[in-house]
Length: 209
Image (tube, rainbow, N blue to C red):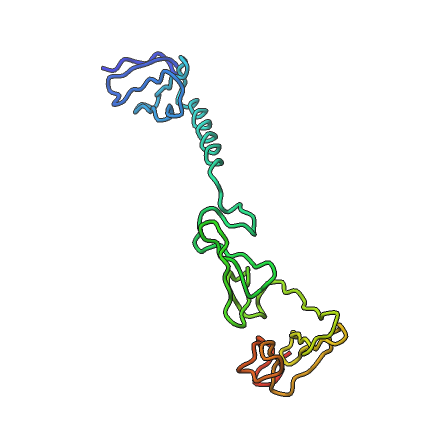
C-alpha cells in the first residue's frame, strides 16, 4: 500500500513507483533524473522542487549547449578569398586575382591553381568555367602601350568581328572581313572554326545584336 504524499513540493515516497531518484546536487545531468509518477520532485541544493520548476534546469542546459556549440569552428564563415581549414563538398572555388581564365580550388586548406579550357572563363556564380557571355568575372580592359611596337599590338573587341590596333598609344577600331573573326592567338581575322574569340552574338555569319 503506497504511503500518501503530504503535499506537492515536499518529500514523498511510494512503493508502486518503478523508479525513484533523489539528486543531492545540481549538475547538467540532473534533468535525466525522472520519476514514473507525475508528482516527481527534483532535489536541488537541499530543496525539493515540483516537476514544473525543474524547467529552469532545462533552460540552463540549453544555454550551456549553445555556448559549447559556438566554440566549434564554422568553416562557412571564412572570408571569400580564403580557403576553409577543412575540405568541403563540392570544393570551394576562388577567382584569380587578374586572369579570368584561371581560378583556385581549395584543397587541404590551400589554394590550388587551376586553368579553364580554351575559350572558357571562370564564373563564381556558376562555380566553374563557362562561356565569356555568362561569366561574371570582372575583366580588366586591356590598354595600349605608350610607344608603338612592331608588330603593332592588337586587342580583342567585345564583338568578335572587330578588334583594336594600337597606334600612337591609342586604340584604333578595325573590322574583320565578312565571315571572319578576330583571333588573338593568330593575331588577325580567321575563320570561326579556329578563332579563339568566344562568338556569342553571331549565328551563321549574321549578327543577332
